[in-house]
Amino acid sequence: MKRDDDKRAVQAIEENALELKGTAEDYDAIVEAARGKRFVMIGEASHGTQEFYRIRAEITRRLIEEEGFAAVAVEADWPDAYAVNRYVWNVSSASRAEEALNTFKRFPVWMWANTEVRDFVRWLASFNEARSTTFSQGERPVGFYGLDLYSMGNSVHAVLDYLDKHDPPAAKRARDRYACLDQFLDEPHRYGRSVELGLTLSCEQEIIDQLVELQHQILPRLKGEHQIEEEHRFCVEQNAKVVLNAEEYYRSMFQGRVSSWNLRDGHMFETLEALQAHLSEKLDRPAGIVVWAHNSHIGNAAVTDMGRWGEFNIGQLAREKYAENALLVGFSTATGEVTAATDWDGAGEHKSVREPLEDSYERLFHQVKYERFLLDLRKRNAATAALETPRLHRAIGVIYRPETERQSHYFHSTLSQQYDFILHIDKTHALEALTEVPRAADNEPADTYPTGY
Image (cartoon, rainbow, N blue to C red; front, side, top):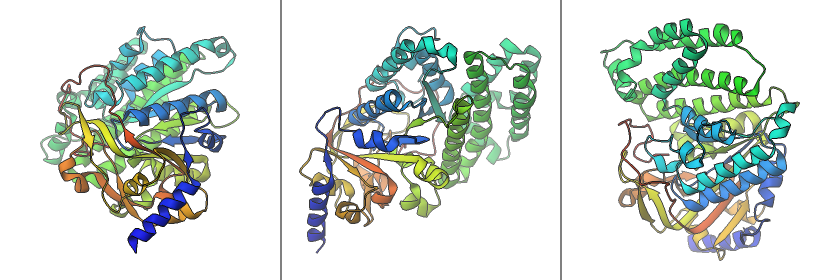
């Protein structure tokens, strides 16, 4: 009976899917659906697949050129991504995209320092440069920003560097407040463990005091009209928020995965909303932002095992608050290669992706006659009806362990409610890092270990 159900599902998908032929029209349906949206969240089924990054960039270029989207916000640390933002704004000391991406030093560097991101940020810098004559009339360059919170140490230094330059007395007060973090800035997970064991007092109140002073006293006093000055003020405020939320996050790591996951995705959503408010300040409409993150962050978690475990993500938060004003686009693959590590903080390797498990969406898609296809899951038809039945859905992060694939890389979901569109590339290729992946600069673990989403 199940085999017959799968056969009917495959037939329905073939009748309703759009085959991707490598033409400019392949993504018309997504671009049209994105028109007027606040957020277009484009995922990836792994952090190391070339096609996911390339197609995501192609769609994003169209959204910027044709629909006027104002920024790309990525699953990356704020200060690292801000170095790329300066490059695409053409105000960086970096003369090449590779130099700007060299800022990414924390494991896994290949996630952003790769050939596909390099090509995209080169294009974005050129796009902004061609429009530079309009910036004096109030238009902004399209930006590139990070959403994540792992950068407690780098964000502390960024706040201090800004205040050293603009308000030295305030910089001294900030150093005094952040001093309780000094011994942990290179290994922030040690801070969380030390507080949890009662060996160190929490720095939370000092960090709150610093953010409050920055927001209500320092930044209003330094207010200027130049776009770059506005951008720098927003950047330093976000770094101070990263320090606050990272402090709580590293303490929460020892209270369980659900708590730390929700703090992380809550921070990313909070950053996304703050970014949109910043970009929309002088517009008569909300600025459109494209989000690049793993499927596990941008697909609606409420209809997956994650939701049943008590976890939420930015896709769910956006869906609940903004409804149809958030568009969620996921990816899947069946076979091929992926760039991933075996262990956290390990070297990146090109690994073979195993054939998908029975009862998975990937196995179902593997039987479809098209090598590459797009499904519009918003439509009510036989294909979306067939995808209402929960199945396994694969998620490969920066870690890939084929030997424990079922436990490490699959969860149940209801695909037709998880995304608005799904793009399936049946055989994919490994992402190419710009340089050989080095050991990480610190030994910071993550709540996403060992999957690394």
